[in-house]
Every structure is written in structure tokens, then in C-alpha cells.
Length: 90
Image (cartoon, rainbow, N blue to C red; front, side, top):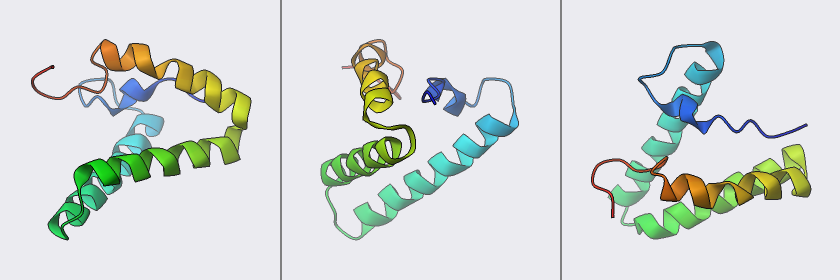
């Protein structure tokens, strides 16, 4: 089973559907966890690394190593194209 590559579903400007709604709710939980951890004094960089590790581990458990590696191979281009950028680009 391939990993769904449509992480753009987090974009609130896109059409609504059940899958996108679920992803937006999930993103809200992650964002809340980041905010709470920062209020508790945890470094946002440490949280980001931990979240990436947890996410990749879950994807491997769900889809396997090959599918997750194929998905991860697409991330560099998405980062460079601004898919994860909010606000000013560096």
C-alpha cells in the first residue's frame, strides 16, 4: 500500500473532504503538542526531530520501509519548493 503523497491537504484553501478534514484535525493536535512543549521549555528543534522520528516510525510500521523511503525521497524537493513554508522563505 503506497503512502498518500497529498500532504497539501493541510492547506486550508483547498476543497474540503473527509480525508483533508481528518488531516487538519491531526495537524492541530501536533501543533498543540509543539506549543505545549515549548511552554514547558522544550526546544522546538528537539520537538521537530522527535516528531519526524515518530512520524517516520509510524509510516514504516504502517507501509513498510520501501514505501516510506520512496515517500521520504520526495521530501527534499517539496521543502525546496516551499510546501512546508509558512511566512518568509529563507
